[in-house]
Amino acid sequence: MDAKKIIDEATAVIFDLDGVLVDTAVFHYQAWKRLAHQFDFDFTEVENEQLKGVSRTDSLNLILKWANKDIPAQEKEQLASSKNTWYLELVEEMKEGDVLPGTIELLNYLKETGKKIALGSASKNAVRILEKTGIRDYFDAIVDGNAVSRSKPDPEVFLKAAAFVGVEPVACVVLEDAQAGIEAAKAANMRVVAVDKSRTLTDYDSRVEDLGEILISEY
Image 1: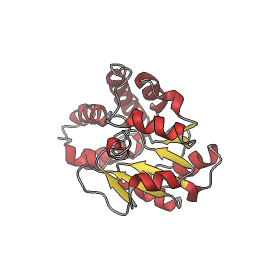
Image 2 (image 1 turned 90 degrees about the vertical axis):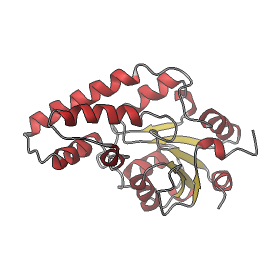
Image 3 (image 1 turned 45 degrees about the horizontal axis):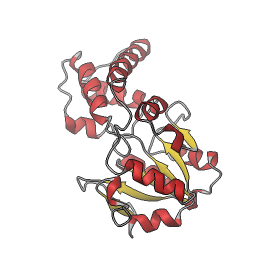
C-alpha cells in the first residue's frame, strides 16, 4: 500500500529516531568501534547493523559476546558510560536542520492534517538530538530509552507512545529503519512504513527510501 495513504488513514504517527529523522547512526558506530578497539575486536558495519534499534546495554553485551569477553557488571556500566560520552561529543556538533531529507516537510504535513506525532526510540539522548536539530516542538510525546525497560523487538516503546498521545495502537503507524523496530510495531498491532534504502527489511506495510518520498506528489 502507498505510504502516504497509510499515514493519512492513521490518527497518530510514531517515528523511530536514528536512520529515520536524523543520521546519528554513524556516531553510534564510531563510538562502539572505539570501545570495541579496547578489546582488540574489529567492530565492522556488519555488526553495527545488528545493533540498530537495540538498547545501549544490550548492544554492549553483544559486542562483549562477539569479542569473547566476560567482565564485571560495574565495568560494563563504566564502558556504557564512556561510549555514551563519546557519542554525545559528536551529537553536540549537530545543528538546527541536521535532519534527513523530507523530515521537515513530513512533520509540517502531519501538523497541518491534525495527526498526533510521537517518538519511539531506544536512544537515551533523543530529547537532546531533537533539540539540537530544531524539531523538538513537533512532538506530542517522546518515549525513549529512559522511559522503557524492554528494548525492541518488544513493543513497549510503541505501546507507551500510543498511550501518551491517547490513540489506540491499531490507529497508529510507525516509521522504522530496523527489523527489530518493525517486529516491535507489528507486535503492538500497528502498521509500519519501512525507511529502507538498502531493501533489506521485511514484513512492513509499505517501504520508502527516505521520508522525502512520502510527500513527493505534495511538495
